[in-house]
Structure formats: structure tokens, C-alpha cells
Image 1 (cartoon, helix red, strand yellow):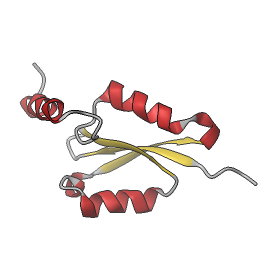
Image 2 (tube, one colour):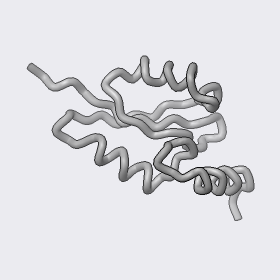
Image 3 (cartoon, helix red, strand yellow):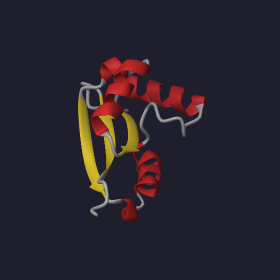
Image 4 (cartoon, one colour):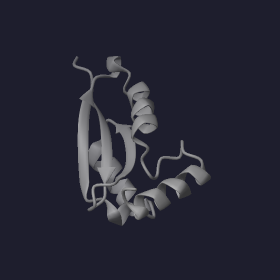
Length: 94
């Protein structure tokens, strides 16, 4: 039996800002959930995928990506960090 592919997904807005990073086996349902349930769901313009098998430890990769790429809406960021990131992103390049 083949392992179920696991998707590491990145959600971007129409200005190519990284909104969220997640891992799922059911991509269409998960993205639809974000669109319906998250305050930022209507801003999703693009989905980028990386594919893994469960043996590849996608959740470890997810945490590394969150720390390195700093998405706006992952809960691993503190509220202060989120507000700071939003201000930085809205201000544009220094």
C-alpha cells in the first residue's frame, strides 16, 4: 500500500505576501476551510505546494518554514509578532 501524500502548502495574497503555512493530506478541503473560517480567507490568491510522504516528517519541515518565512497568520507567532509583521509588510521595503 502506498503512503498517502502529504502536502506542505503556503497560502499567498494577491500581493504575494505569505499568509499561512500548513500541512495536510486533504488539500482542497483544507484550503476551502481557510477560505470559509479565517478572517483572512478571502485574501487567498495563490497556493504553493511541496509534496512529502509521512516518512519525510512534514510537520518538522512545516515548523522550519514557519520560522524561516514568517507567515502572517500562523498561530506560532505571538500577537505582538503578528502586529509587527503586519506593520512591516504594509510599510513595504525599508
